[in-house]
Length: 264
Image 1 (cartoon, rainbow, N blue to C red):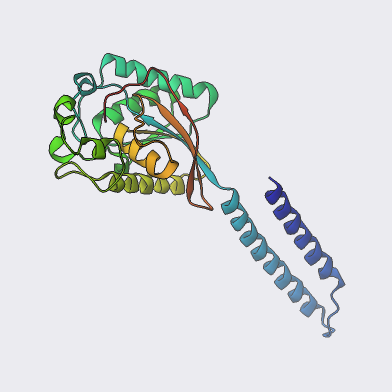
Image 2: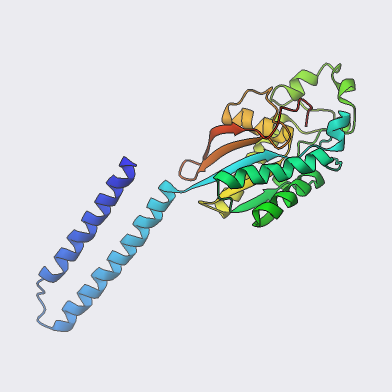
């Protein structure tokens, strides 16, 4: 806060000095109207300078808070099948998880908005959260799960033996499933989506509902989280986007249940 207080002192010192100069002005033109026009120009410049100052000041302190959550448990999570950008319904447990997520967040935080992936399992989770939080809900395509190409809908037990399994699921690089999306491409797309949301809703607290591997790729590449770390269903990262630096800061990781080891 020291830097902010310094800016305030500079600003108010600037205002004081300009206002002090105005009444002491001595015009070489004896006409009063010239003095009046001078004072009007001075006040106009002061107003412009003030607007510019506060615009810069607001940018320096502007930040948007995110609660970045994975959707509730789905039928394919239980069956250990890779979903990617395909879909399956929430289980009864997943429904309970979504309701619990909203209830836990509402106890300690004021959430202004929910933004969700357009995939059905994420939208269902977001709708359940909305019922508790009673706030606006939006969708954003950049929050979709990573596309796993030809691996989607396959059992994870089958994929575990694939030679590229480790590089696709436990690293964030240019490697992808056949006809799929790389970890770096997914993380970049996700980051751009969060940045867009932050710029459209500055200084708000936003609940994001997204997906396991999309969050894993982003958090590994941008938040320095271990690339093998996969959020539990309805697990949450709390982070801040600083508008002046265009950077994300991770605060903590929250849980609503035991870790779910299923991928995506």
